[in-house]
View 1 (spheres, rainbow, N blue to C red):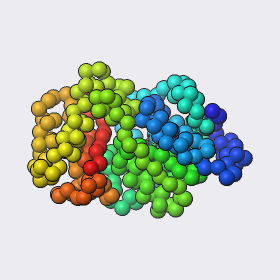
View 2: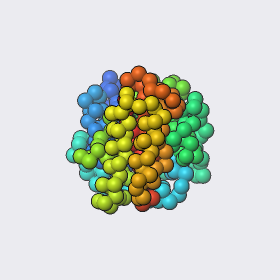
View 3: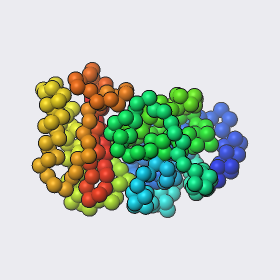
Length: 279
Ligand code: PAF
């Protein structure tokens, strides 16, 4: 695996090798886990060159303690990416991507950011879109891979890719789960065994919604699902929304199969977890 810390060097290297090759890109913030490696695997299956980036993007954190706390395991990440035969790693410093004091660009997301993460994490998606646009401009991949766990991020990236006319295919990859059902996430590293166990209620509740979506009205089911969180103290439900998959707007009646998504954000000992199910 070749590692670059400067975009100028990465770009000139890519110019030299990419002729007639399919380049896939996986942007990450590091602290890599099996979820990331499943994106890598998917990318390898359909391309000649796979580029991963590791960059903890400051403009997408609206809370400085969340940014500081974000787990960083760069040495281990490099070893694992080498083992998994990633072709290129881009590992920049902030100064390679941002001017001093540069803020996130303001984007229009056609309402995809109105609810859930967009409603609660002010400026978050502008920060994500800012860095993704910069990375796409540096790498110009044919394909880019994102996890479905961050469903709102995935839909927003699909939207801006089209709006900004990047000729890039955005591929969403199914969420990787622990045996307990808990969605794999870099933030899981911040949880004790006991809290990892308690956090399994998130996916259990999502499954409960999927399994019962023909037995109750949507509003009844949402109420029952929320009640499951009221019965215990450590896991704080931030939101539980049932939305249309395409526009991510709350719905009052279920749509056709695979056009609905239930999404949860909950925190446990101040670690914020999100997950969703498409059904
Ligand atoms: O999903 C993430 O890890 C980040 O939001 C991303 C897409 C790498 C942008 O910083």
